[in-house]
Length: 136
Image (cartoon, rainbow, N blue to C red; front, side, top):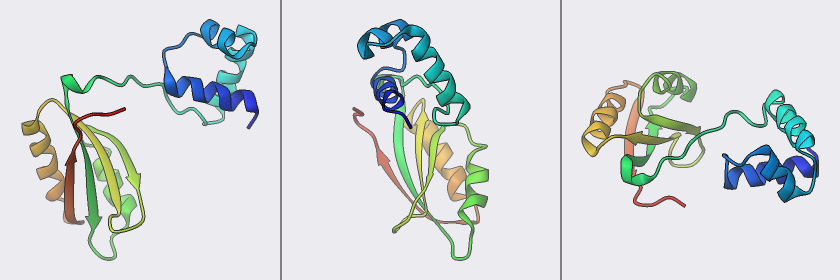
């Protein structure tokens, strides 16, 4: 990956809404160059999507740690999790837990409904929920 690509990605991480013109000024290159690099990053799968991060005041966020029962493939659980509303991100991880999910629901009650569905999966061994107070 080119150095300019890395700089573009760094700036987009800070502010995904920055315009190509502002980005070009900040990185001292042409707007066309920024546009071409972003197009290449999208086409190459480096940038998967642009998202909006909503303030915590409007929702209830958690990080939830999941273990799967022995001999259960994490991919089968991930397939089921992808169908549930309220899950923002899913990570397959190593260590004491097998899967980590980031959730965003309207309220603690909505989250409770979501986690109860997940606990109902026969493949799930245990869950541990961490409530997010502040994100930076």
